[in-house]
Image (cartoon, one colour):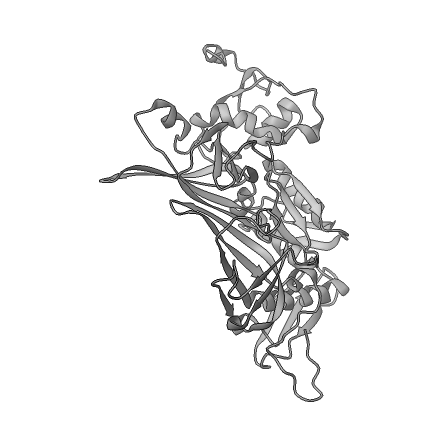
Length: 445
């Protein structure tokens, strides 16, 4: 047998590449990252141990998969000569000769035909995802093995031959009926683990930067961190709560700094900020692609004042307030920002105000092509100028692309581009053309 299963009786009490290992030799309650660190010197390589042992795992959680006394196979160390930062090899960013209007899906290294599907990429959420309907014949053993439920197969999703999402196949939905058999697959980027996984102790850290905090929480579960957000001064204190997810915790910290969380096409967690770039395209009502559209102006997302409150050990409670003059005075919002102090506290209040304003006006534009006027895929983070009198935008307004849906169906390829005011992310003053201040009144934006 390939892994020498007949020699299971010769298991070792320490993780050794190419040998069976009796769990518990390092510590009670150890996870796969501990085994990988002991076997290969790098906890990020835990998936190499998970893959050949997942069928005997007691849980789908890699950190609780095996109990003390279980015997697992530790694969040989085939990349020991590589540097740490090179251990997780990137997959190809592009597929040559791919259909420009097709979705390409690679499951465990196998290119799968996609009949229909949807791919979602975003600017300000940490996980991207996709759904796809693929041909399904359960009588074919190769298909049954490839789509085995709870297999946590690796998955790379391409649109027009460009990699948009690298992660795992999480959901498999087979069905049958008078019209035949179908198989619906759903996958997410590697960073989806941050959305689902809770933080482990210790819950409090002092004098730590956001990047360092992210690396502490992400490295142990095999997710890289890419920092493109500029200066990163340390917080006085960061505090998480038991049961809080990793993403919720990092998102709270990022919001206080006006930093956005997203993910790279390779599945790394990305910290970045928006740039006030020139528009890459213009949407004008009545001209393609703006033949239809809808916008929501939601006044309930805005408040007259936003007060950030926080208290550090041994210090007086600090607070800072940002005002929005367009909103009635009885709409008040207070929130905690324990990690901030001084000017950071004011910045936290300002960012909360800007974010609320931006979320009150979101524009969705159906597009009949996946590509802009320059032939590039619609990309989150780019700027679009919009002029649409029917949507109260007769004077024109520059929006940031914050979400793109790529849809594939029998009718062809189309999508939806979601737009948000860029000032929400740049920290600049956000114009309010729908509010006229009273004489002598200063408009707070």
